[in-house]
Length: 237
Ligand SMILES: [Zn+2]
View 1 (tube, helix red, strand yellow):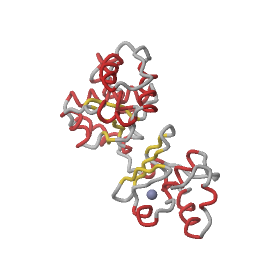
View 2 (tube, rainbow, N blue to C red):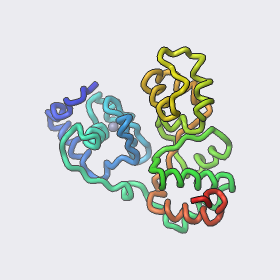
View 3 (cartoon, rainbow, N blue to C red):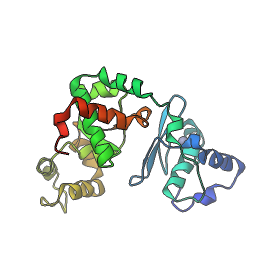
């Protein structure tokens, strides 16, 4: 376990300095970074690793139990460790050509395509990296076709639920300090801070997803394409 602020002191031997040197390279750009939760996801050659400031799923950390390059990179991104680092998310994930991206989308059911459109609207215009949806066969279609990937984002899991619905679900737990009149955003923050142990049960029908990074370059084109195809969805914009 590494205490915050002690990052500099962990760079005390040659092996750790080597890990730090790898961490600043563009190859170590996280494909997802969540500042609020202090977590990041990295794309390895065949696996994807979820990393926090205390833990990483990679073999290096599991074997050595010392900060790995992913943890150093996360500490750098968080500003807990000083140093300049290179970033290039496009280079680390093979980007689809526009033609291939649209082919990937067009083979999906109309219902699935409308979910992509909905997600891209929140992503492009509301700056949402992750979004939560109720589990469904359509959502599975999107995950199986690797349009979306599942991500670890507690706040996003609450997206599909309305405030009143959440109030009704939370009330039976009788958590001290629970207030029914909070705005949804505040209520979600309160649950995450006060009762993180009930999140999984509260949001058991939901899954948090993000766009597969192979669409990073083409996502705007995909959105324009879908908007033309299904114009009624957001013609009030
Ligand atoms: Zn690691």
